[in-house]
Length: 208
Image (cartoon, rainbow, N blue to C red; front, side, top):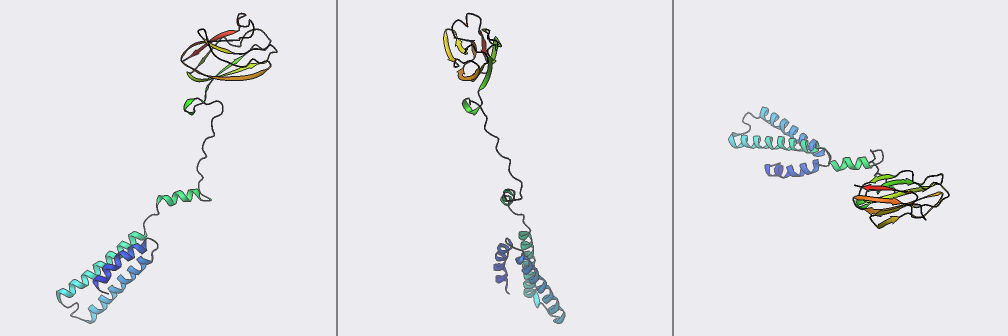
């Protein structure tokens, strides 16, 4: 085997080493055989290697074989790519990825956020009043949850100034909701059924 042949063998062994350790075993065996041959010839032939050209040839072959062996050892000892680890986690027996969180329930405001909620209830005894006279909410999409357990029909109407913004359906002994886009400010909520507002069924909603 000449120097040109050994030079051509290096990339082949390196490429093969990416798949298995066979190239490393071959390179190691060739290096060991070369060491044995040099030792035997050196003992049996006192004039070996025959001058400076012969010495250079022996040294060059030895260095090339050592470099080839070291190269294949490094290549075959390389770690697997990270993508293989990811595939292993996805495979049966691997660590399962966390499931995505469930979607938020209820009406959604702009940007995918849940609507801010305001809970109001009519007096269950039938008196003309709500359970609260003031409430607060964040500006944006505001959901009004209204409960009326009494037999007297009521609703919730949202007003700013003299303008009605929205209103729930008029109900009795049930629940209902309505959602409206509200800007920061002060609003009035009241029952628009008959004279319920005049009787005191009203309150203040502050949106910030």
